[in-house]
Length: 311
Image 1 (cartoon, one colour):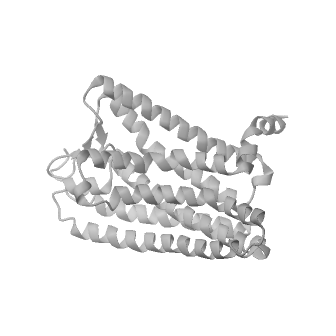
Image 2 (image 1 turned 60 degrees about the vertical axis):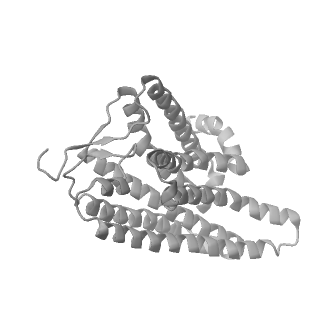
Image 3 (image 1 turned 135 degrees about the vertical axis):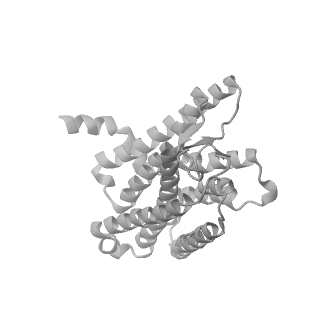
């Protein structure tokens, strides 16, 4: 160690000490990782190649897919390497990078889901003004604001976390570096950090979740007044993928961070972290692929579009 309070590396928690189980975990996570990558890359490629999908809704969907690829790539490859090599060490710089990226990408997911709810609100509640309100300048500004805001938050949270002293154990009770576990092993007073994280989390999440719920309140009130069943179904079908993705994100977040302390244990903490980091990136593209016929059609004609692009 360079000094008493700054470890040069941390030790991550593995899923098992048995070699066979480690191999099983690595194979399972590799399959999940490849599936998530393929699903999100297919969505990005389909939207990029099909000019019919060059609209605000799919522009934000591409941003969400990019966020999911980066999110699952931040934690899962390192976990696979730990299982295969049984080397649980992560450098101080690597730990800082993981904390920053996880905070940034989780924040990006929240902000993008909020913007996508606004897009659906304008499309259904103000269809005649949709092109005027959701013009490309506005879309780019909203996407940029989402990414810039979450980068600022990640920088702040990461900075105050690693200003803490780590003069005791350097064993992190999780398969990746995260703020709660780092606070647990810190020998500094973490109350100020916890208050800052709590205030920012409550403020941002309350605004985003409240905005989404209010948007869908207006959406449902408008959709239920549509006279034709086919019209109501068509309107709902554009919202159900977003609602499903948002619900998965909320459920995994609540289970990870708001469950009672009586349900907390090293095993449960590990399982909840896996759900939180793995489920959204792998299920988001599946939900949009199954529930959106335009995406399905665009995915099937990717080879044709690539061929015409190269011709």
